[in-house]
Image (cartoon, rainbow, N blue to C red; front, top):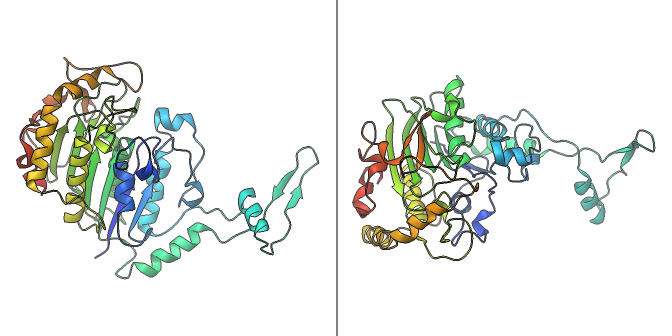
Length: 375
């Protein structure tokens, strides 16, 4: 059975952030992707987040545009990311880059590869250059997919992992799969970390999930207070197993930022990122994704990490005075969150349909016992 795994990076984040200086042991999504076994494109892909610089544009299975600051501010580009993921799952691109870029052309020339000279077109004032054709990355990757998916082109199961807008991208892709007759029967599992859509992004495909999602696991940053960073707890189908957990720290703390501010600078608050990474690895492994390197924490290790979180409670509470957007917001002293498209307080999201039922009202003093539903 082909299990296909997709890693959606957060806003401004890329697959290279496993080495980013702001994360003490690598940003979670990039690190998980870096640790996966199997063949890229045939068995897994990692997709850079909106506003990250468009470095994957030449490789996408759908046409992308340079969205610049609107990617960071409003998530522009994530629909293209979702379409790219859908096309990879189906093993069929709808766009390819066949022309050499100037950088490609100059690199081949410097290497003394015998290629024709660039052709100039237009008047001397508006002159443009044609640098020639090439075999596209999309053609190579599509053939790779066909060769390596031995038991059928369409995967039998899909696992999604995402942080921030990458988490919301998981919601969007799951709904796109549900809407496509070719893919709607594929079971989907999601591991989301503080899914935040940003302003004006509470459309149905971002805040709800269909029956194709079999299990939804998510961790939410209890101490985030930045305005515009309201996280989403999606409405789910009655048959979906849903497990949501609070975690001390801010938005970036949960993916490996150990700073005392939850953004940058010194600090050694490594516990939230370590706990979240461990349970991401636990869930992915249980769902059939093969990881080469894992933390493999014991029950005692997890309980000790939770004890440390409780001991550093004052440091985490101080984080609430910081904001990524300068402005702050809350709901009666708690983080303001969105249960589907309705705003409420962090600890109010509890009860049915969550397993455990404590939901975001759970205490952080419970330790390993809190996670029995996802192990």
